[in-house]
Length: 260
Image 1 (cartoon, helix red, strand yellow):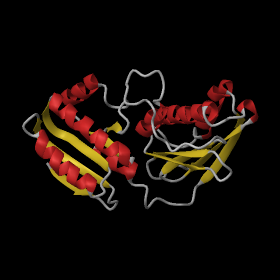
Image 2: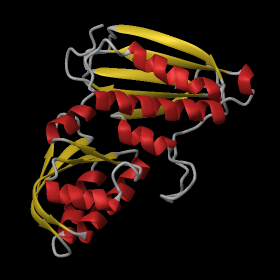
Image 3: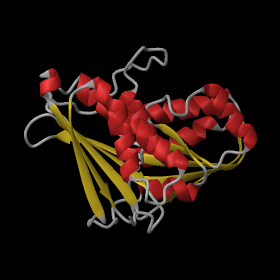
Image 4: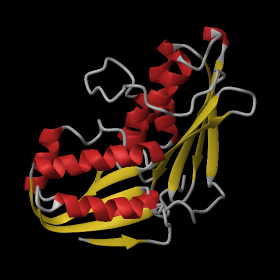
């Protein structure tokens, strides 16, 4: 195992090689825990050279998820081989555990975090104002995607955005609109050279972004925030100036993709 930290101290790449089993996991846990406690709360596990992974490896991933979740961090599983990807698929962890997502390679994973030095000036902005009506949500999701149709973005990323925006809108309507249809929800879209930022603002009592499924993968609800964090590169919750909650969803793009 080797650990690399980039220009952003909150991001590190843990490159693993060989076999992950009951004999190697304790040492991995000790080394990874030390860098997380030192502030590296966004961890990319490079699995490209892992040739064996069993239930001990899954236990390591679950442990790291529990370590990162209270710190609002993220765990990205990058470049697994076909066999290791099969083990991860069988586990059902990716996309369901609060912090865990997958990436095709380490570069894509790191780029998803590398927003600290990103341009602050947007290329263009647009917005939508809607009444808090659940029946309006499909149309709003479609309109947000339509705004982005002229930028270079993969179908998979567009789907991620659509689902994450849908979850944020559903929360805003169901939980952030005490006045019902009389309340408004504002959707603001900002496109930069390297990212899309979508802000959904409601007028509710406020929400800090804590997931509420209580770790139960079979719960009937409570996975909205989990999906947002899994599908987007950055998710931030803050108090809106006039009251309520503003959630910002950020998706990384290839440089120059934001041209309209």
